[in-house]
Length: 222
Image (cartoon, rainbow, N blue to C red; front, side, top):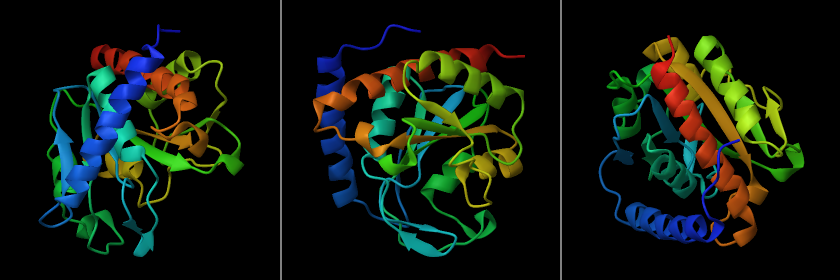
């Protein structure tokens, strides 16, 4: 396992990013805006459910704190991030969706090779993390899963259960089926997603550090 970030440092920074995300949400303008940070990385982190959002035409509640969590993990791992700040328009298929979030993903070029999509799941599902490999996983997905399972010890990491990221509306499906990129979904249990609870820092630190390893491996993979 890699050495994780100091708990106090990551907690402080997460709270700062939580406030920054709140400010971005409050000032969001335009058609379904997103926060984009391009670090020229092989891995791109996304948070499509950071606010209330449409999924397959239905309005859903936000995956609480996944926006600031994704911003934090991206900063620590030095990878690009795309975080939705407001959703106004209904959509059912990727072909009809046109917003800042999807335009940025469709415009990804080298060195981008993999989209890692951050979600939040309820504690009742059991695992600390669930890795969803999507409808068309390949060698990069397999490599990333192996790395994450190793680096996230001793946390409970499930693969494709209860969420496999295979439905057509997932970002993982978009990456694999439409963008020619690898894709992986990471569901984070609610107990590890509050920037206001110091007890969540070890899991967030471990995830951020693990993504650093994934970035390096994906960048240099054949």
